[in-house]
Image (tube, rainbow, N blue to C red):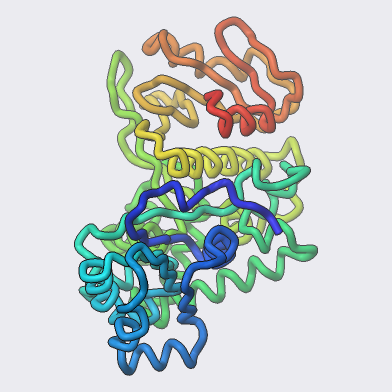
Length: 378
């Protein structure tokens, strides 16, 4: 069993909502880190139906517990009516809750009690490199970092099932979209633009829907934590900059499946795109787990000069290259970026195992970069 780097006990002494996409390991981390908590599993049909019929049973069960008692309710969106009782127990009995679910969308959409700021929202992501002994970069690039997928002997079948379950449970049963076929097509087109700048009009033409519908589809992917948008760095110095965000699925394995990318081979464009996605995926998890106040963005000029990741106000600029041999041609965009932001730290992350400095640019092997990232070296 893998130990997760994210320590939920460090979040605060107050209650939390723990959100994360399906199969990222929310239940496992709760059992690992809080073995003595009172645990309600709403995937247990008998418990779910009992509490759905009479939510007050939760209050009756817990009202005499000592102040500060930790209570975990897994899959709280299954019985959102319990939130009124949770609210009462927090206020009257000062109990502490961890409320777990795949997203807050179900709660918000139906107007349920979200505890009025008494529970802090936190997020669990797929595995990160430091959680995996003998981390295999090529396996991660191909199959992603969802725990069951990375560890499986045949992850292809799990990826197929994941998409089907997501469509059925998160989209169809919740009636989030009227035209499921159009949304399914959107998922594939969104994969084609994975890591690219979003153009709603072009995607709308591909899917046969309006641009406003495409925008709402992206909102659904973000709300259900199946994807996220990375904003453009917009502080203009000399060159005009692109303002539109980029989109990424929350796990590179999902994008690979939707794009029919299998057994990715180093040196190919497909491997390069997936490699970039994996590094961005790690940066996103790092940003949230460390509570970094610096935003993650990307930089692109209207003439097509681009830097893949910017941390903070140009404190760090990162180019991501899957090549196994960094050459001067790979440094061009960072040198141009330095003309406008000379104080920035400039890094190329790659599969080149020789970590070194070329001029003012650090060329860092991807595994060394991940180690630095999680040990406060970036």
